[in-house]
Image (cartoon, rainbow over all chains, first blue to last red; front, top):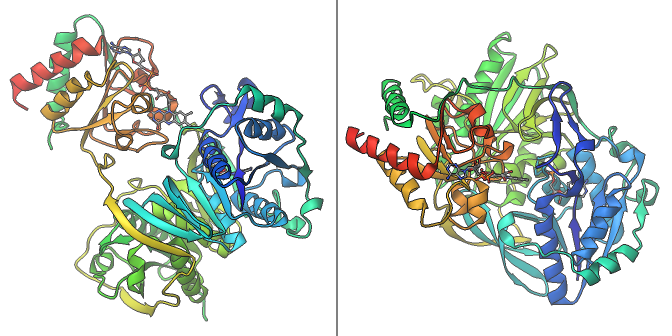
Length: 266
Length: 330
Ligand SMILES: Cc1cc2nc3c(=O)[nH]c(=O)nc-3n(C[C@H](O)[C@H](O)[C@H](O)COP(=O)(O)OP(=O)(O)OC[C@H]3O[C@@H](n4cnc5c(N)ncnc54)[C@H](O)[C@@H]3O)c2cc1C
Ligand SMILES: Nc1ncnc2c1ncn2[C@@H]1O[C@H](COP(=O)(O)O)[C@@H](O)[C@H]1O
């Protein structure tokens, strides 16, 4: 059995500064990290690989520094990493991203289990997983909260979808989108960190993928959605009536206001 | 096939015969978008998958021109692959200009499969739609924790978007019905690759429709202390919400979490008790009608989005509030 985990390197959103004037994320203000949701996918993949005695490969598409995230993935238990990096891949929307990742998965020989996070904190679409599955012609299961069973040919999971929880069984190969509720990601150990430091990270450019994807299908060229403009919404600042001393009075007045505005009616 | 009329197709979701309400909002928005164009230039159609017995009158009364009903019992289960196969087959005939899908969990999982199958683009989680002078759809979505709004255009057809629930007013119910229901046999009824064994339970608690939300954050120091939050909620017949910080602490179930990775709420009143107001929390509640914040730190960002701010200790203020509400018998 083979397992692939897709991880993306994203700005640390809890620290990133936002330049409201220019409507841009000031990436220099924050470090980068593995997309937090992908750590749950990684943990699931590493767990399965350990229990089945097989390999788990982390894969990312992005600029060369993405190799750091792959090393961190290895430090957190993955067997090896592959970086997809090429100027031609830049500016990709979810379609071009998914196609490129699908091409790499084909080149690897489609793994039995492909794991992705629920969404990225920067792109924030949650589309890439399902699109990859379609490009590979395999089924996918989303919002996985629990893995119930893995057998020779299939996997059974709980998917939180459609206003309920559904037990789904999929034949391999399958792509799984996991939620934060699935597990608690482990921290890198000292030993695995030193293994990760020495790991070779192969980089695949468009050329390496040329049997599986055309150059028109990647990057900006392969992206049908185009951002036409960015608007910074007027900060919806409300005039806050604030009180710190005479709280009792303030509460009475506030309750009065709320009753008057019919806010409290059921 | 003549393709003079441009079609806006809405994918309706139904569970156990109940149509998801976002469908009516999308019909409302579609009607609004079309209004500025000459009559007959656009039509608004709906595709719905479900058993033979589905009653689709409600959709007709909300102004759909055509309803394509793909019928099979297997659509009672959320099988993205099966839905995709059937929808794509039908779309070959309809050839729509635009395909709109509600951003429910199922919609968000299904739409990208359809988009990939059709080799078209897809914009996630839109909060506004416009039609450009060239007749193309402009899809507007928040990005980077709602810091910016991106205007996106798709160059391929159909232009596809998932759209958030509760962004648009639903279409009005009209007595008069001009649309028709077109029944289509399912092209594919079964899926060899995925078996849906059972539904374990309906989603337990859903905060997204709450009328009033009392929300607790890290200012609450233990699970025990949540009692006063529940008490306040009871006084106001409110639901209890939470920041991620206290969900992570295990004070309350994840289904109560408000924010970017939790639920979006839009109640008439939101009372935040000991919540700092991180962007990821604000993303889930800042559109509430009236916001009240109780926080001991006068500089907490939550006050910037609040209408009433009480700078004080939740352990003192919340009981005071409870006492007052009780004495007024609200
Ligand atoms: C990818 C991602 C997704 C996220 N998704 C969400 C999400 O969906 N929802 C969410 O809420 N967060 C989310 N977060 C986390 C978010 O960034 C914050 O960490 C979190 O919202 C903080 O919760 P809090 O306000 O309860 O805690 P804190 O930030 O610790 O704030 C506690 C507040 O309580 C006040 N306080 C303390 N004691 C008292 C007292 N006795 N009386 C009155 N006030 C008191 C303090 O002044 C402080 O302002 C996400 C983060 C990331 C990176
Ligand atoms: N550039 C990328 N490289 C590797 N995996 C990615 C990339 N972009 C997205 N993914 C995967 O797809 C999931 C959903 O991403 P998104 O659709 O951008 O929200 C992420 O959680 C990752 O697992």
